[in-house]
Length: 65
Image 1 (cartoon, rainbow, N blue to C red):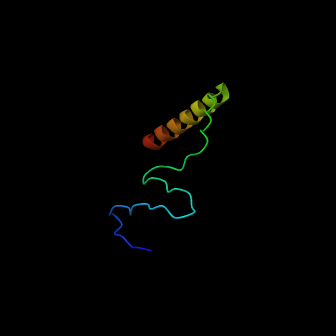
Image 2 (cartoon, rainbow, N blue to C red):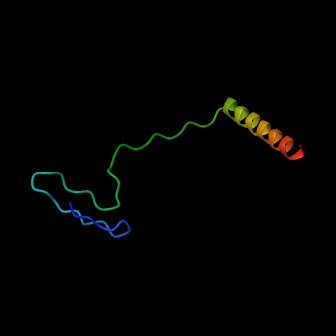
Image 3 (cartoon, rainbow, N blue to C red):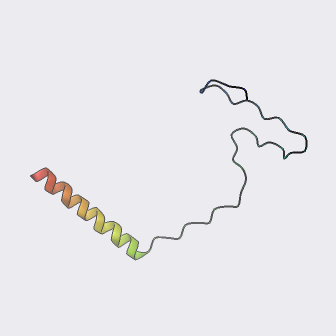
């Protein structure tokens, strides 16, 4: 295996006889598309709001003391 400097360019990809063609440098291996995220529910918004209020109250109490 050829060593290279950590911040140097990547070595080029060469085809190997009998193997799959190499992926181009910098590209990701193709795969199935990711599913879209479901929208947030009212319960998730409520939990987030409650946690934000609790954190804000704790912050204010820590500043006041």
